Amino acid sequence: MSVRKQKRGAFTLVELLVVIGIIALLISILLPSLNKAKQAANAVACQSNLRQIGSGLVMYAGQSRGMAPWGAVYDAETSPGVWGPLPVNSWTWRDTISIVLGTKRDPNPNNPNNVVRANPTFWDVDTTAHPTPWGGDYRGYYTANLRFMPQTKSQDWAVDPTGNTYFRPHKMNVKNGSSVMIVWDGAQKFDDFADGSADPISYSLDGWQSGWGHAYLFPPAPSQSWYNPDWYGNRIQLGDSSIGDNTPAGLKRSNRDLSVNSWQGASMRFRHLNNTSGNFLFGDGHVEPRRLGDVIVRDVCMNK
Image (tube, rainbow, N blue to C red; front, side, top):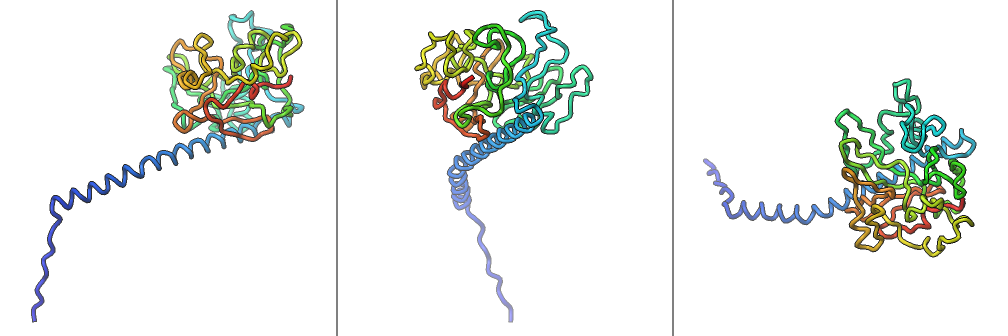
């Protein structure tokens, strides 16, 4: 007995279009959620970076009498003046901590304290690599508190309130460390000479008071008695000194990376979650995200 095969009909064009439409609708519904999840994961990865940086600082301090490293070493004894030529071997705290975390030193014998590229701990997913024409690709995307890790050269922003002596690196034991920020997301710098790295040290989050000897100090030194303590409650100012604006609209406008011929001594960037959130390492070692507009001058100032 023969069995008749039943014919199966093919999809009609209308049915195919309906299926495609449903798939497109589902994708459009899911994409925002997936994008938010990705952004949240990027922010968490950055927080992990900062915790590792904090561990590197503790490791360094364990071999350095409990002191943090220099933020930037320009060898003031051999460099003739503020704008004179730099010595061959200048380095920053990011080089130092990269070496502590296991990155190989620069093979150039003239630069024994440098690394060619920062340890991956200093990279951040929410940044853009920008190699220079000659191959520079350092990738240091975090910035340090000037008072915690200062620079050696005696410039306006690297002297104590008397104007006579250099800052010294701060002790790892920070008074009220749970409320004092020591490292944070830095603004990238893009031009023909910059590789997209952030400034190693921040200078102006207290309204450029570093130029007057104040420099992230709380409370102000007796010689700076004119500095109103109420100013510590002001929102930090992100933009250039000429366009600084700490209103919500001004902060949103100045929360940016830097292009050619741009200067931003603040060097803080809220680059996560659609440029609304930044990550911060505190003096007690914990890491905390903050929303744009929620950081005040007091948060970056130390007691000495």
